Amino acid sequence: MNTKQTLHILQKKIQFTPMHNEQLAIVGPVKLPVVQRELEATFQWYSWMRMPKHFTAEDVIDALPAMELAQQQQSSVLVYGDFEAASNPLVRFHSICHTGDIFGSQRCDCGFQLHESMKMIVEHGAGAIFYIANHEGRGIGLFSKSLAYVLQQEGFDTVEANEALGFDDDTRDYSEALTVLQALRQQPVTLITNNPKKLAALQAAGLSAHGHVPLWGGVTETNRFYLETKIAKSGHARDGSWMV
Ligand SMILES: Nc1nc2c(ncn2[C@@H]2O[C@H](COP(=O)(O)OP(=O)(O)OP(=O)(O)O)[C@@H](O)[C@H]2O)c(=O)[nH]1
Image (cartoon, rainbow, N blue to C red; front, side, top):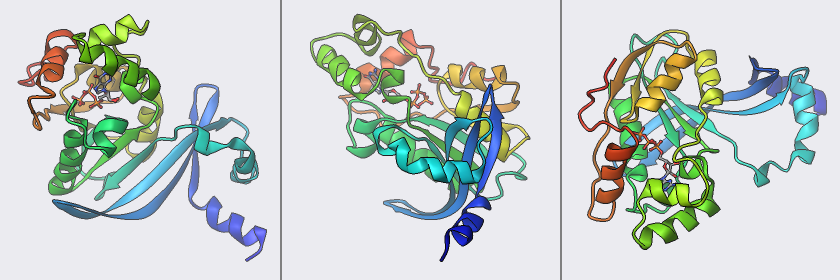
């Protein structure tokens, strides 16, 4: 296959959407059959990256070898069902958690929430789970999170540990995921979350929501204090009382 034919195939799978003074190059859909312990489903997978505003698909492909993308984080989204047209799809903005999602760490509820929300979306019939890769440790990064865990082992709570390292409790920015959401669907969605800041970010971007569904579970002796701190200090609601 020659370069022209390769480009022709790839061009059809890259869409551009403006974002501030740049643009996002969104690749997909790619068919992704997923098998987990209690889930077997085929998702449509999209990944995205910020690119200079003038870049075409050809420019993107030409630039790739020099970008060293394995040294950075890229986010993606798994879409299920007729996401664009469904009347009320479920959406989760899931922040990367290397320890919880990959290793199954019980210091947090992240692994439980990731797998449970994928199941909820499939059972519901339509939705999307955004896996936001530059959110590790609520935005402090993996290395800093390991230092925060050292402090937490000495009695700091999760908020105090971030602050002791010179960070705010939560520095996450949802703007890229929100831009991709808008590219994939224009109508309201329902968020799967216990975190009012996520719904506020959606609304601040001018997107409408039907509200949220809470996702509690996976509570163990090792993550109970962490979850209670999120309720006491970070505004998380156990009962969904901040429903809009
Ligand atoms: N700094 C820090 N980050 C943590 C800790 N435990 C989990 N995290 C991070 O917290 C984030 C949790 O993300 P989410 O589960 O998407 O968000 P959330 O704010 O809990 O809200 P919902 O789960 O949607 O209710 C991930 O980025 C984890 O890496 C911790 O003890 N310290």
